[in-house]
Amino acid sequence: MSGRLPLEAAWVVCVSRFFQRFVFAVSVAIFAALGLGYVLGEFGWLSVHAGDEQDAAYKQMRVYAEVLRKIQNDYVTDPNMSNVTNGALHGLLDSLDPDSSYLTADEYKIYKDRPATDNAQVGLTISKRFGYATVVNVLPGSPAGQAHLRDGDVIDLIEGQSTHDLPLAIIRFMLTGKPGTTVNLSVVRPFKPDPDKIALTRTVLATPPLGEQFYEDATILYLKPGVLTAARVDDIAARIKAAGKGRKILLDLRDTTGDDPRQGLRLANFFIKQGTLASLEGQKYPLQTFSADPAQWLTDAPVAVLVNRGTYGPPELAAAAIEDLKRGDVVGERTFGEGTVQKTIDLPDGAALMLTVAKYEDPDGKKIQDDAVTPNVVVASPEDDGEPMPSSNGDEQLNKALSLLKAKNG
Image (cartoon, rainbow, N blue to C red; front, top):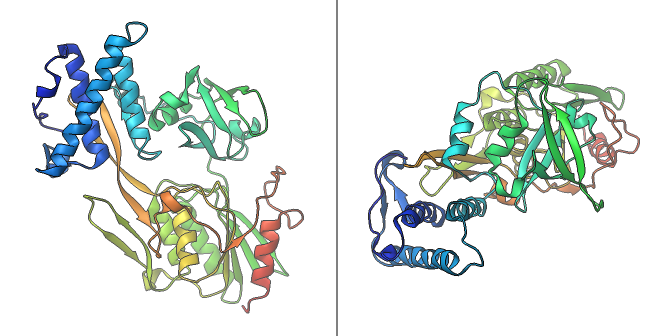
């Protein structure tokens, strides 16, 4: 964020100069969070609507200033107002959605200055749920996988710091580092009274191979991407082309993640010849509509898609398009819910906002982050049996998808 902040500060006349600086920072975040502030150009000069919206904004700031004044004057001990305000700003951004974050000047400097060589990881996809870092999915064979971490596990502490007090961007940053270094976690697991203390050694992770298998006398081609990169989607396209016209496709997107929404849309386009695959829009973000490209379409063979809580990001776009456009059955359980665009806004004191400015919507108009993807055929997840490839024994989701495809004409 460039430019200077407006200097309407009459409502803090009785507050010290030290305290005033923090109130100004809070004011910026309140405007952004409530959608009452408008950022001109590329989030340059802050301005507000006149009239009722401006009055409402100032009323909120006056209330916040009064709360801080009471804390400063009446709390049982003399509080550290810097910590109080930073905590409030973290909470303010966290209340919007898991991806929006406030980074203090120190946090933002560390985040920007990390060496490119610190690229070793532990194999976790992390988001936030109920204010704490939550495991979305785990890369098989990774340090996290070897420690038997699972989706739904909550990371209470990372290096002794509560994840409730850390922005998501910093949590993800702390999980990466130099190869061979260790990160210490306190993990809360379902139905266990006490957290597990786990030390994970970071390593440079290889992309898992594309899972491929044939079922029902080779009439069904099973594909499990694991991660949706451009190269992996290219691999899927090659397998579909090689399979021929008569072969049905079972696409297993369980515990699959990715960073590029375009790859989820590409994957959907392989099965969908025409129609709207998704859209993207925000309050100040122009509407974008993503339509199927007939030139990218590959097959009209029957298709089914497997999803679970670990289906995250681009794979959710693919599953939603296939389900909403009635192209195939989606089997399993509700996905995690991730599909946003963030804008990093530099603040004058060296801090930063990482603010969600747009959300992806499925063809039916539901926001992926808010509603996730609910399968049209709901089947609970199987217990993790540690197998690199699923067998049809004991995997009810897989069995159901196979039975649905078997009943369809090739």
